[in-house]
Amino acid sequence: MLHENDFKLLASKGIGEQQIAEQLACFDKGFPFLEIIASASVDKGITLIPKEEKAVYMKAWEEYLLSNKRVVKFVPASGAASRMFKDLFAFMDADRELPDTPAERTFFNEIHRFAFFADLNRACLEAEGADVQGLIRERQFKTVVAMLLGKRGLNYGQLPKGLLKFHSYHAQEARTAMEEHLAEGAMYAKNNAGEVNIHFTVSPEHEALFQSCVDEKAAALADKLSVKYNISFSRQKPSTDTVAADAHNQPFRDKDGQLVFRPGGHGALIENLNDLDCDIVFIKNIDNVTPDCLRHATVVYKKTLAGVLVSVQRKIFEYLKLIDSGKYTHKKVEEMIRFLHNQLCIRRSDLKHLEDADLILYIRSKLNRPLRVCGMVKNQGEPGGGPFIAQNSDGTVSPQILESSQIDLSRPDMKALFDSGTHFNPVDLVCALKDYKGQKFNLPDYVDRNTGFISLKSKDGQELKALELPGLWNGAMSAWNTIFVEAPIQTFSPVKTVSDLLRSEHQGCLEP
Image (tube, rainbow, N blue to C red):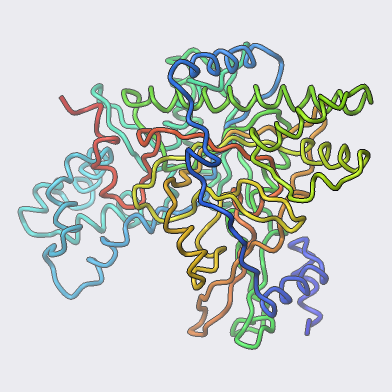
């Protein structure tokens, strides 16, 4: 199955032959669906924080920041922005010169409202001798788009989202998504030394551009916000790439006979997260940011989520210390079981049949693992995953963030539970990565390897099967302790298309 040259390629990636065999076996057997018990809601599995309790949790977080614990804001930022501009790429390929679709007309009618407008105007003047409005009057619409997307202009079609200008400010200032994450991090992740640790995962071809943005912008932002930034980058590891398969589930080879590998998806970033030496990590996607004037709700809920995390962690640590001391009482054991049931939503049907020693081992194993608190917003019809109570392979049920591909929607009972979901996963997590002794958990140990998925792609005109690893906040964190907390919709402002930048949550600082 493997050729001599294949082993050189595998060695360069740090991938073993056994790893290839396991991945090919996934194509043969596929991935099992998860059995869901319920869609999580405020009545079952999602905590609704009363207004009067937010201050308590925020204070708990502020006190935690005064300790010597290391806090990091982790931002997956390797995605290219090309999908943001799919409508404009389609316009460039269309056999017509004038904008015709609603998306195209909106773009040109509102072009002056984009934060990148001044840069685009300058690029058009330099390359074409006319500004944007001049080119539009001359009906050179495709020239304007080419200057936005192409290398002669801003090259936005090839840049990562993190380096696109998202927001304009009154003082002729415009910030990229990356800069907004720096500004946001200063609001809730600053330690007692005034330091803010932010880590971006980036593509190799974009790392130098990100570093250039840091060199150019971070110092001024640090001065303005009175913080010191510690900014680091990492790349998705080649060892997390997955082999592609052909129609017969054999290794797919390109026209030169080389094995074809593909990135393993955002689930591969569990390795990057595992490499961080920190106590608490905030995780949020690169495109989900707001300008300064609209950030208050986000900051309040970030601090609230983090306060919930450290408060629950404190109780878990108390229980684990008590268990390890051997000085627990029957009453305390009952309290721990209620904590598992009520706080962590973990249940096991045969719990009453366990002998005392097995019961303690069970409680300890469930408590002693990574912990995350996940903000959940009310369902607004956005595509993607959501919060569920799911059956685990060990017979327990627990909260899980699942994608629709993990659920057998051909079953009426499963589809009914899926359709009844009231909340959506905005990827807004706060995570605790160390045990009560201060030792790092080895995060790959908590991945459910049976939660990847297979998709169809093409290369050189041939169809191939691509394998994606368990998603970072899905199967990669399957065995973590998970708490869902309702967050307001104002904390969720993703940018999936360029027109999203025209929404009020990205324009608010300029509107009267």
